[in-house]
Amino acid sequence: MKGADVISQLNDVLDGDELIVSSNGNVSRQTYHLLPGSQIYLRGSMGLPVSVGLGLALAHPEKTVIVLTGDGNFLMGLSSMVTVSYLSPPNLKIIILDNQLYATTGGQETTSSKINYKTMIEGMRITNVRSFDFRDLDHNLEELFLESLRYEGLDVLHLQVEEDTLELDNIPLHPEQITKNFQNR
Amino acid sequence: MIDTFELIDYLKDKGFSLSAGVPCSYFKDLINMLEKDSEISYIPATREDEAVGIASGYYFGGKQGFLIMQNSGLATIGDALTSLAQLYKIPLLIFVSYRGLEPDADFPEHLIMGDVTKNVLDSYKIPYWLFEEEKWKDILSESIERMNETSLPVCLLVKKGVLSE
Image (cartoon, rainbow over all chains, first blue to last red; front, side, top):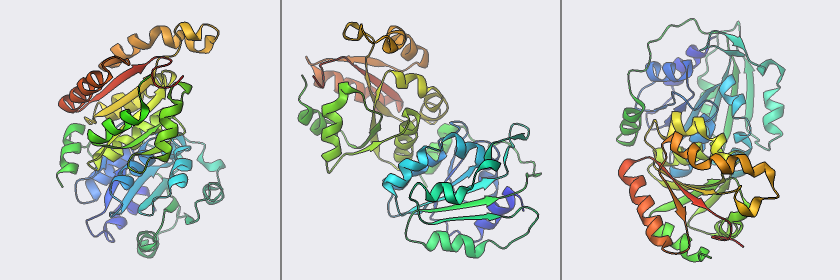
């Protein structure tokens, strides 16, 4: 299973009211092309999707906020997870798509393979953390996603995936337009 | 010194409901007071760029926050400013302590950044004001007005003794 397959399957469980923040590069492209609605597609600011998601979750406690992040992005902003734990907004759901690569820049290795994500994040006193290895495996993710979305608390889902082969066009929106579209949705 | 109570009240009136940042001793009183405030929460970020991310997400959600950091943080937030806040048109009010001036003569760790602080802000194309006790409301009002007009970050440089002893 690849990262794009995960994002495609996420589409099946969303009710359209969720607010999504995606990390720059392939993940934002996939989120733009494969998921509905006007979302926050980060085009730069590597390392900050979790922080942007945290701010958004605090502004809209009545809405579910989903952060979709690659492993390189997640690791760059790792300490932001401690701030997330400190505040623990119950409406924040973080999905880490871990292909152990900086895929957008040509597939250079990240250091992600050294990490036990579940142990690490639980060590930050975040209790609802699930981690699965879906490399070389097709899996119906509906139950996993629904559990995250229905859980009334901060939730982290770490999925090990294969490198994407999907070629997607650049996002055809200037970031100013992304902001306007999101705020007018 | 500027009365911290009055400052926080003024910021509330201007619509701010969140603050985030990394402390400087120059902001000791302000942060202590924000930690106890029920209307403006203070988020202790682990890094200054994280604080920019949080305030940006908060603005995407239609609400306004402000940031607190030392000028050393201006070096850390370069990418968060240029590829998030400025790129996505996020209005941010940033209180920056102006370290590395005369009171820091014995603190060489601040001197180089102190020397280039205004150049850094000029390079980022961030409008800035010296936040001084005299006419502080006028300075604050003008900077917030600019922030809202442009929907971009603006900065207030705060010297020692303006907000804390």
